Length: 238
Image 1 (cartoon, rainbow, N blue to C red):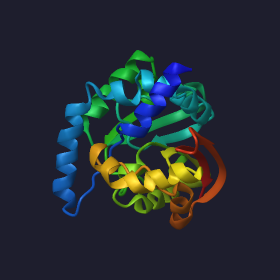
Image 2 (image 1 turned 90 degrees about the vertical axis):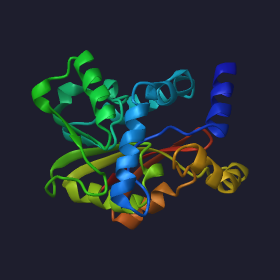
Image 3 (image 1 turned 135 degrees about the vertical axis):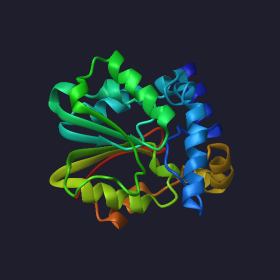
Image 4 (image 1 turned 90 degrees about the horizontal axis):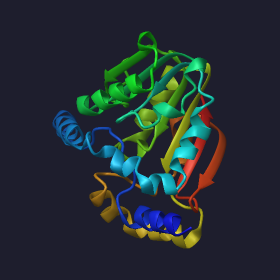
């Protein structure tokens, strides 16, 4: 459709969907900069990551397909404003823990959880860095990541933390930007990676997501590609 074509053009030429993890050589200063920046974005963040372009591209349906099976004790990395919350079947979830570096984003996510009538006693919203999770080993049945790896300076470090906090029978569910397996499009991503990173506040949109998972020690169980390979839905286990 015309709407889908326009949305794809926006996706290719504009800023990819954003997520939140600190970056930069001075970690403490970078973290504070990111917090302030995303606190400022919080009130309008959904216009980009959950707006009409995202819907036209099928991101809402993708979230639903990937997340509705989450069960047990669930952790979501870089929850942002909580765009994923409506995709969970909370009747299957014992506890839901969400982290983000931005207090402003977490506040928006809490509001969304209240609007969805989530059980407050089962929820935790925690200010934390995905590369140093404040949880014991083997704490979760499912860890969810949507569009956060692309802005992590060291995504393998975050994925190693995911592996650490997953129970032996647990699984990681990721929806991520990925280098396309369509040759010319993948080459275009490589050529434009630096300007896109600058335009999209640090998002590396040509990552080898499967390679990052393997490097972290996580085992890839399934892979689904969408939007000409620009997005990938991956399930992995410890």
